[in-house]
Length: 138
Image (cartoon, rainbow, N blue to C red; front, side, top):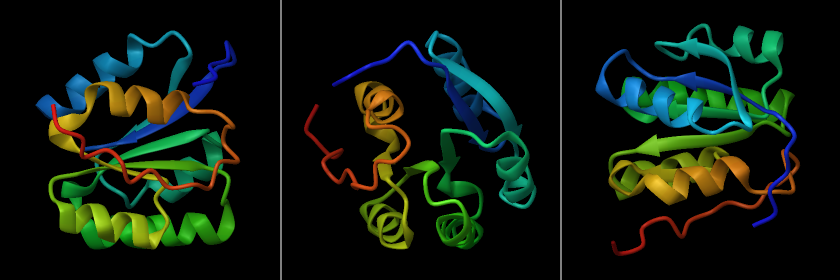
């Protein structure tokens, strides 16, 4: 993995609670990552993406699966370089998110190294390859 000291601007879209708090702590512990914006649901996300032009967007799919699909499709059509990392609860959600254009669909039970690698992976953000090997046995 090729890591750079350049700042990675991130937007996090997740409901308030333990998962979001854990993700915020995880991101804040990474010196390369700057949290550009935070949202509770996908509705304001498109405007936030235009305003903050992040390198990566991390979305908890449990907030509103159909809205997340629409958001990913819309952003892919208008701003394809943004890296999308979706956090999913099932293999069905994983397949769905990858099919609509997410770069990564990480199972929530396997987030530690997978999430860090997905955020830091270069080339960045031009990478269009999808990572489906995030269901490794632990």
